[in-house]
Length: 400
Image (cartoon, rainbow, N blue to C red; front, side):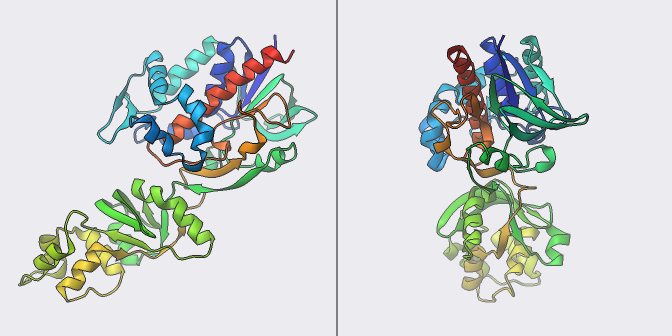
């Protein structure tokens, strides 16, 4: 019986293992950590956003320049197929108010337990605490608690993740070993990450952990609405993540991105100015802004971070509608939700097999793509993992 090895036990790796095992291939999964899918479990702590329910063409467009490369895999195993797969595991899903899709259990752990039970029934074997070192004469090398081991297989699927949250197992250390066998990568850098802002001590002490709700954020002319969280080091949250790649690219190019926050996007500057022109009476400035402009304490503190508040109502209204934000950078890979960059598509064929190494397949976040949060990241990992596993099984059947 021919043997396949999957390296990496995140969503892409487990999907590849399932595709191989369904085809009757004896499958072994090697994982660096002490248990599978550590980052997957962390992502589901606050609610596992599996995918999105929006129109498929709009969904596909979320992948930017990589959408044409990912399209065949997402057509084969996209949002609808992923939801059906969850249901087969006894984990029904629901669509939230934002269109995002979650398991009814909300957390990742019930889904992962059901998935691992299914893989066990298909005799998929796991080998934990095995850190991938590279290939040597066609064999995979691993650092293990018992020393370095080499593993031989008829086919390999690499699903080693990107480089974000390295403490959970993905640190990008595969880049150089793969380069040695003809697989090159674009540089790995943070995606879907927070902005770094040098807040005043007052801002940190009084506002860290506070959510700015229903704000507008604009970066170099592009704008979006949503919410974000003030942290000790800057800002995090969905609306910030949506712009993190653009901001990171500008800063890496040594340009200063023009970032503005609209604290009252539903109110015109003229209406605000009229409200702020009313007599303040005995109200403090903060209390007056709370009543006249409906700004809470954190929003007022954010205003003050830009300097002394204008006394002129029109100027103060203009500031509320366009608060400048001095962003010094984006959060590093240790805090990024995902990684941009990875194995270039030109080094792989249409089945995700390495052109330089027949029988070696690549899937998941290792590939050169990125996407915003909202279920897009996980869906593409599931889709490319399944595609790589099924392609590896087909290759084993036809390669003799």
